[in-house]
Length: 236
Image 1 (tube, rainbow, N blue to C red):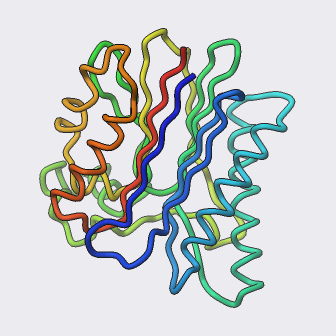
Image 2 (image 1 turned 120 degrees about the vertical axis):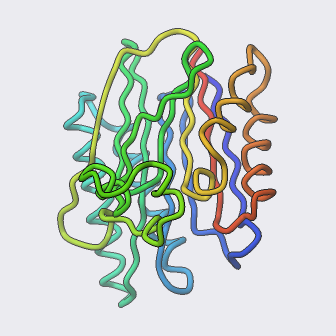
């Protein structure tokens, strides 16, 4: 399994509050986008990815419920650190897992996303927990209006803000040749899905490194308004 990750502070922010962790031997990858004053966002995102990675490594039985439970553990860990430090902090998270039997899971909270490229077609696997997504679901906005909405960066769920949080988990059977992308909103706010698909569509058996770097560079070329992080995963 090949997993590569690239992260950049961007052109506006002073520090990088994104974090990631992965273990190709186990088939787990996690990405988080922290938020909070000073270094709080960095602390929250690092706690989240480390807690989830360790929890999925140690899990005896893997299921939708297992992924949700591990994310719930991460929520409690971030909240406890927030109380300990006396600083409000939170983070989005998206976690990817592939079992030896070929079952693939994605669990997420917030607006960090997971995508799959199958037969050259990019498909979003997650639904943002955000105000604009809620407005789209209610028929108050269309996709084009959402891209310029003043509420586009307002999320409705995050780890560390309350004692309980509902993670959204989905699963499917992995197909040989599938390629996966995990990313923070620093990518998707700056780069369209059409552009992302174009960058990823023609990889064939080449290394994933150039494509990951190209995605980050494209976000920065478009303005780099936020930290941008991407993880590309290609099971063998």
